[in-house]
Image (cartoon, rainbow, N blue to C red; front, side, top):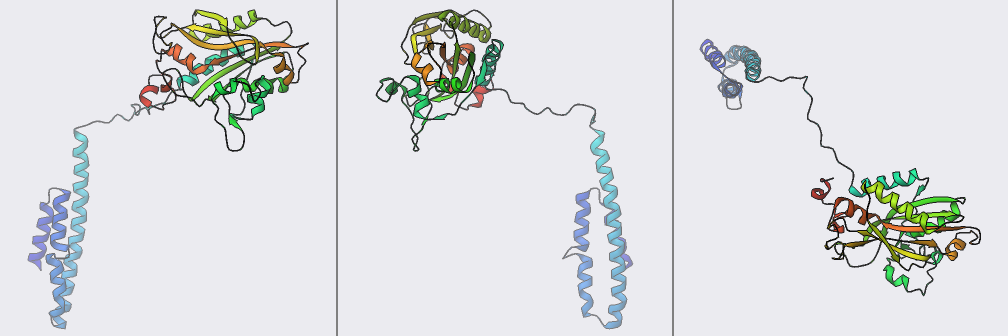
Length: 335
């Protein structure tokens, strides 16, 4: 027993690492270890000898377990000290800064637009994207048999409603909700069932503006558009007005923007014309004012509809509108 104890404790003392100590422990106390085998062999001894040897083996096991525990703690301390000798951790240094996201370019320009119009005294409003035909068409002087409905390429829902094809559907709602005179803009998503290309998308964003007052003129409209573009682009932008037809305004105009992607030289965004159709506008049709519950002989106004998505493309020189709704992080990280 003394020889066994001497051999076991010598192997424990000689272990130079935690892994080596574990091997010693298995060799002596494992299922097939030397001491374990001796304990199993007690059953074959005579009762008196079994009692004597059993006591000695258990004392040996107790001493061995204590020696392994003490040696293990010593080795662990030594390994920790050794691991810190070659490196230094300054706990006062700042940690790793987590990656932060950013605002979508649509959101950035939307906030710029809102800031410009709030500064001019406009209400910033929005209305449901799932609309009824009255607010989306009929109240805007677009009856059921009007050819303009075909141009809209509408997504109809199973409950008889539709996905709004323009933010103009907020005009009559605003006239019924606000006390004239007032100024308001409506910003949000709109939907068109049409083929997509570099300048057309089935889901995009628009801004609708409406002013109801007395003695309203096109000059007021043009002034507001000039301030909008200057506020968004931070500089003067070249525009042109040309006659245009929209059922809810009379007279109506198309306001075109000099293409800021190609500088007017011609590209897929402007269809090589140098100009981008930017917005439709005009004086509010008397039928629309009447649908809004106001008297057109007393009140008049002007309205405009801006493609916010195209405004974003012009500001950041994006050559394909489909990038905006793609969800591609490689594109979004640029902003």
